[in-house]
Image 1: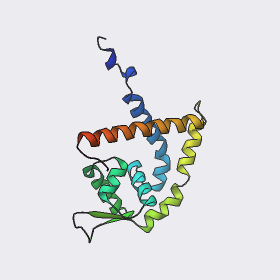
Image 2: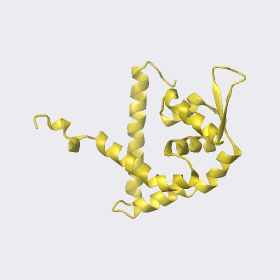
Image 3: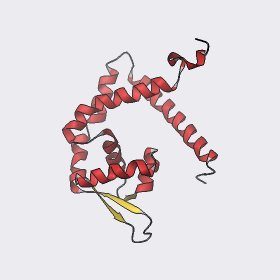
Image 4: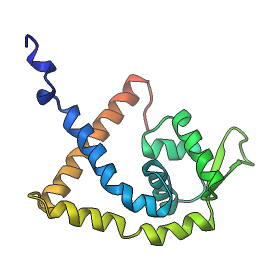
Length: 157
């Protein structure tokens, strides 16, 4: 091949993509028991941590566009996991609150991260390796998020 840089084995993005898909697949049996998808699980984790957030706040935490998260939230509302309502202070904002049914899933979901960590730790990778990988990926995410904000003229300060 004339372009070595285009070989799949030479890409950084492919192992990250493949690992993400495979980890999500490992979550699936646990999430099936809860009747939710992985993206719904992520939204619930955000709301379990901080309830009554705007759609924009949730999208920002999950690094998603609002046009991606809005249909997801609509389905979650139909399932009775959340409620959406316009902010009284600013009608442009939609607030998302977790329902009792959504709160009930928290206890059922509480063992999922430990089970997946345990399963991964049974591989050749040790817990320290997994924690270092998480730190490295968080650094990549922070850099790319900051880079995108700079190119869009946005800053947090």
